Length: 252
Image 1 (spheres, one colour):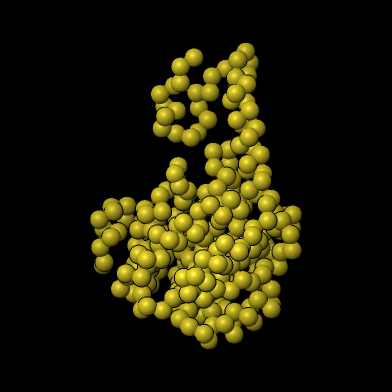
Image 2 (image 1 turned 90 degrees about the vertical axis):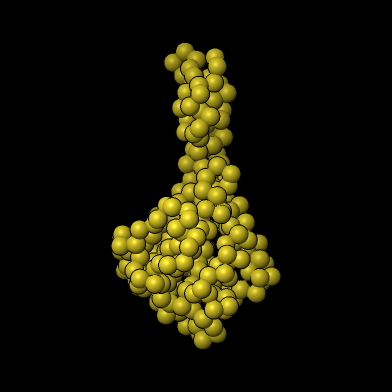
């Protein structure tokens, strides 16, 4: 049986063929493999050494703090705990806040896909950080980077509150599926505070090379959002992402 043409344009499991009442054995084995990769990405512990070493080499101040989650099982069963920082972490952030420019804070968490952080974060930052340094709002002072194992998107609100940041950006491993077990999402929030609704966030999804959004396109989109969020003083449903690449590259 020849390969259906549309399978050249999508990773969705379409046109798999059939053998009797089921799919061919080869496709069945690929589905089992995808399930195993998704489970591994979901359950594997996030080792932060690579990102910490990278940030240190780039002279970017970083701090690793803790949520109220103790292990992966609890993380999956208690999303509320993953949104809250421990008291000692809040105090550490408040002390750390006096060390530099915290108007904008970057956060990173393994989320639901550890593979996403391991495979996508550092390569993305190698593209993003040089472009960030060319922005008019960037005052040649590196913004802090907070590492948050076992965190949810909303944990960035707690970080920003402790640091008195005007804008937060969090990189997070997206929920793995049968087509993607290593996809990274990016969320931006203006004037974040504990309890901020999701309607006040902007999301860039499926940053995943080579099959998802490229690092270059994700960089342009994120810089566009940061630039205009700071300029207009808003984010979320009130801040629309202009998908015209020339517009994203030009300063307002």
